Length: 411
View 1 (cartoon, rainbow, N blue to C red):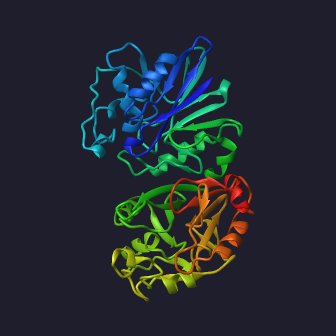
View 2 (cartoon, helix red, strand yellow; view 1 turned 180 degrees about the vertical axis):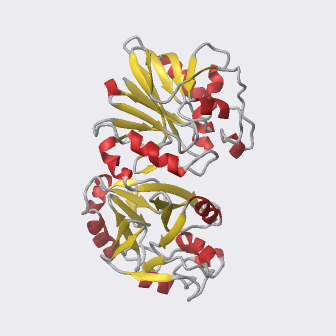
View 3 (cartoon, helix red, strand yellow; view 1 turned 135 degrees about the vertical axis):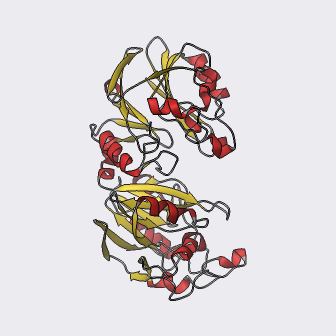
């Protein structure tokens, strides 16, 4: 039996943890959370915890280990994760301005190796070293349950971020291939977000998608997606606070293009870092026409003008059904007005980058300048005619599938 628990949003994101149990109510805990107090009490009342497995060293997955200090309960993790626990940078405690609370002898740590198999409470646990998010990330596979516990290596629709200390995007690509080599009907239990079948992520073997979120200093985080082939990359939209992103990209990739979904300031502000650059920036003609207008772009809301003028950027106009060949991928252009007249979505394989057209559980507002409710209804019909297992990558909030968005057609 597998039971999911979640907590820890005080650390910035909700963390999913799992208990695998047998008919004696003996349990194995996969990861912990930040502020684990209440969950620890709930879990230990229900299960006799015989072991803990840690997928990687980040604070939102290890902080609850404080409750296992000075106990004999075995804590399984990779050698690299053990070494990272006491390092505030490698464990990300520095993000909240704290030192790591762990000392080397506090916990009964047992180091596991790549492809090692261990029988714990009657289940055979296989440990896979899946570097990329951290140097010591592991994934756990239980074949008898058709279960894969991926930590922060693989999520619905994308892989984990590789920009934290010790992350490596090329290692991540190898790890994704390793996990997605398992049968289609195995269920992935990630460290955040919902569970997902292997078959629904097989497209990620050929499409490497990484998420960045920036701009909360304005009003809300904006999602920026990076698609790469290992060395070359393209990005979808920019954001406020985008000055961090070009540095990250330049350290890891050759940036070959930027695709803009619409001209609202929280999606175009980062273009100011590409003024004078020859990097092609793809957008509709209408989006370019409006991106210099402080009212349509909403820059009036912060009492500023757009930070660029016509001729500053290497803009290439796209239109509905265009196909752009870039970094070995084919990007299909989909005209999707509604939130804004020139709004555009982009399709690669099973991925639809929709900007502010469809979010998880709702469509975007149509009350901004050039927005139109009738256009939005037609756009929803268009986008939601794609196969149900396609993922929608919105400009804000979590990913969602076409299947889970079909109800919007009846609203």
